[in-house]
Length: 509
Image (cartoon, rainbow, N blue to C red; front, top):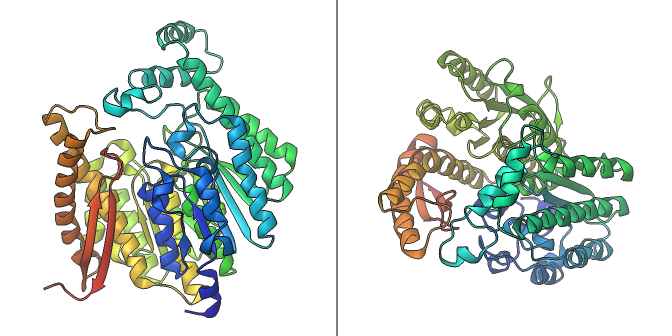
């Protein structure tokens, strides 16, 4: 590891969107791949699901200890302003509170005039956080069925089409008194905070800002917000430093990978290969643009540029509804590039077609013939942007580490193994089993589990994932074993799992 990398290892201070693995754990692991430390606030300050983070304490963390000596910052404006993603979707934090908290961006610039600062925020999604009216969640904002009514209302055209007006009137009458007004007020507050963040780019406090449209398609109340923010970016003349893109969870990873690439003085050149002709036009129902728009934006956000002629990285994108012949040709092309020594990242979007079995079969095919073990990145879960952003960020982190001379091959293997155990084993196999188990015990809503149900699901998840992980590793990386692994359901729901694993060379005996 060279001296430059060691100096930079204490220089990335990262404030995540929340404490989920995809937003907290994976950005840290990207730094480990590159041999660069990514500092984060203590987990207790980040909150957990319906318990919000502590923005004021996080500001204190940024100004003390190792973080205060950072040379680069990657910051979630949602965490700094509200206490995280879920907190951003509910009333409570006033605009005045958010305004004063985001002044920390200007303070950091004053204290660290030479530091690079990247910030990421979200444009509020259409649905509030969906939870059942049980236990402590019963007192949360808009529990079921209210969140469903709000989501249905927000998904109408703005203003409603004549054909939608009867539904709009019915929903306005059905939503509990004051709830719709509170929801609309929250949307307005968030727009104003996002507009404030754009202003910090204009003033020079922030070098790069991305606003991600969280889970929303082409129609709904968010369209007005997106258009107004796009106009604000143009009015402020910061189009080269602010982007508005589909997605949310991947944005922290993308900016961390960008910071790593910048430290390596490298602009990753990326070619994109789709699994079938016209695959670029596939659109996730939860995104407002085709996948090609999201991918091109993410390449740029990660510090790269599209280059089909002389790429450093080739992103392979498997879209839904491929035929067996298309899958075979797609894999053959990947293997050809791998044999030529090209860095390959795979983003498998096929689960969006409801084809869990088909996605699992493709992953198993890659594991069986050794293709998976030679990938520089793998991702196959959540929205198009989440999946593609994770894959691009991992490949960029690896490339940056190699150029810095601080690349950690074991950390890279650990990241890819983590993704296969999570994206493939958990979501394709274990998560459906968890949902069936809970349903059999009379628990139909799996978005918020009371302690007895959470304990049942967590125990089953831990045992099932251990077994699957132990089967995956010999195929992925022969000659390595699991030295330690902790598996949890971090938000006491079945939507995500957290896998904290340590790999070691040698076969376990």
